[in-house]
Image 1 (cartoon, each protein chain N blue to C red):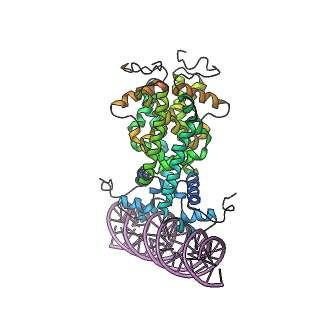
Image 2 (cartoon, rainbow over the protein chains, first blue to last red):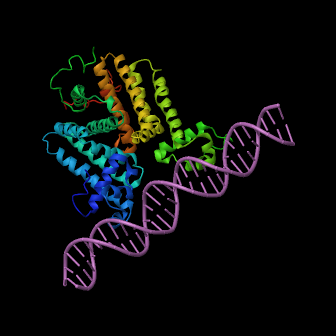
Image 3 (tube, rainbow over the protein chains, first blue to last red):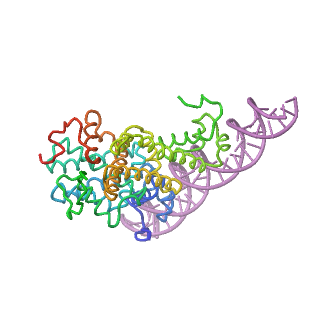
Length: 206
Length: 206
DNA sequence: TCTATTCAATACGTGAGCGTATGGTAACCC
DNA sequence: GGGTTACCATACGCTCACGTATTGAATAGA
């Protein structure tokens, strides 16, 4: 179950990953040296050899997280050919990795700490910039591309939040695809629901 | 500056309000008995007379918050005549009270605590239900009304989050009204931008 | 084999926060 | 005015977490 049975000696990255896991599950407070040590099957003695203090661990964890959530995610999405598919891919990511969402929310919750806040701002910045590019690639001029990007990203964040705080409220199961189609229809210009089963909806003329 | 100069003796509600203030500013961890006491100009002795323990204070604070964020907010929005105006009002509320937003995010961040989580779920439930009613009042049938309600509420939450974590990214100043009009146009069926100044936008045909 | 380096265990000191116990002081009641 | 009640202060013990200091063991290199 635990990973500490594989290698016999720990690295700084092992600690950083453990910190990220802890944050995802229990928030920033869960990053407690002794608790992580127990989790890794060692004691504090190990930790203070790899890091000078708790803050250094946080920096390392934040660094890893930032890379994963910008370069990596964007690189993966950039593999799609057109802007619409990229936007769609980012949205699917929201549903996909639960850990990623938990991590963002946990970090964002303590964005008041300057160390964390700076990284959170950069992550948001890069994500939205990427969104803007995608919308521009779809033919929108700068101003509207930015509006749509911000709105889309807000939907992303809000869905993340709602799925965590009240999962029973967000459509799932058979209604899930309908809901996703509706979102795409609203947020992706030129998108039309495949099945066209939203007969009387989407036009409010009643 | 502080309010403790007005009355000479504290009440349980004073403590609950102080707790809510602390949560809004510093998260749940900021609810520390001794710190609140200093803030109120007294010592722990006072606290443990009004409450049996910290948990009891949290319960009281949550109770107050739940009422404020459901009954009160909804009652105020219900004063509007039609559904569109009500939805619009709820969105304005997001921009209005900063404290309310901070409070929601702070509570939601610790929704894992059963005590908090139950309340957060109820608050979300009632808000979304109210949204659904409004969309139904606009002529949408149940299924689509729910989809739109969830999406709108997600936008609400996401904007809240984004305004806190990266305020420079969300349109403000002169662009703010344009952005709000865009949001309304997307989320409120039958809405058309008043000034019609979105000449070449809002139709992606370029 | 001897030794330096790497990694970890143990023991200790400090501070913050919770909760308890007990004492103090006004106001009010009779 | 003596006593009860409401409200608060002070002092104490406990736990948890951070960080330091010191010791221990394994491994690699010479």
